[in-house]
Length: 51
Image 1: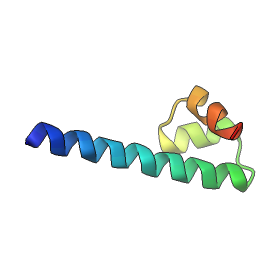
Image 2: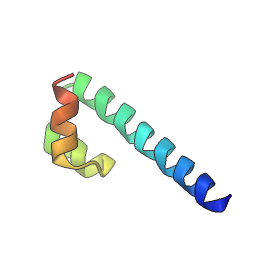
Image 3: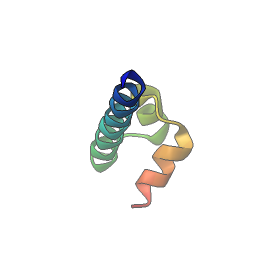
């Protein structure tokens, strides 16, 4: 049960980071700054910017 809860927690954290990154992209933040602040990889931020 604890492993399932931990996995779910990590999924929510990643979803939150993605939402923050998308908001930052919409406001014109630089990709590398978004990666630094959210902890997402630069590649992930670049992929988000194409959506």
